[in-house]
Each structure stands twice: as C-alpha cells, then as structure tokens.
Length: 101
Image: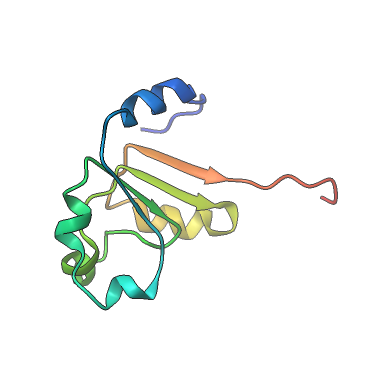
C-alpha cells in the first residue's frame, strides 16, 4: 500500500516508545559475525541504506526483521528493489535541499 500523505511524527514516536531498537547501518563488520539473533531480538529494527535483510544468504548474519527502512534519494530506486521483500512498516527517503538546484 502506497501512502501519499505524511505520517504524523507523534505516531512514529508513539510506536517507538518503550521499545528496544536496533539501528543497522551498512558496515562490513556485519558480515564478519552472526548478529542475526541479537538484531532480530529487538522490538524495532531500523535499517539504513543497503543494510537490508532480503538477501537470504545474509539472514544468518544480519537477521530478517526490518520495521523501518531509511535511505537517501540517490539510492531510492535501488532501495525500492531491495525492500520489496522485507516489507517494512515505514520507509523514509531522505532528501537534501539546496538553493543550487
């Protein structure tokens, strides 16, 4: 389901209140150990950029759970292709504004 209206910040804050949160970036260190159980044990898993969980070969290392996915606009198309399988509850595509453009 696509949503074209902004989600109120308070709704997001409420959904995170009193929850354990794992914030996962795209570090090579994630691939050297098996962090899946530790990551997936959190109430909320936030993944950024290419730290997604839809690659089956990586489930044992980085887990399967993704509640929130965050990406920049430069990665928007790639991000869309990566997240279609992990189906997060919220997706944030960050944009940068500049007077130069």
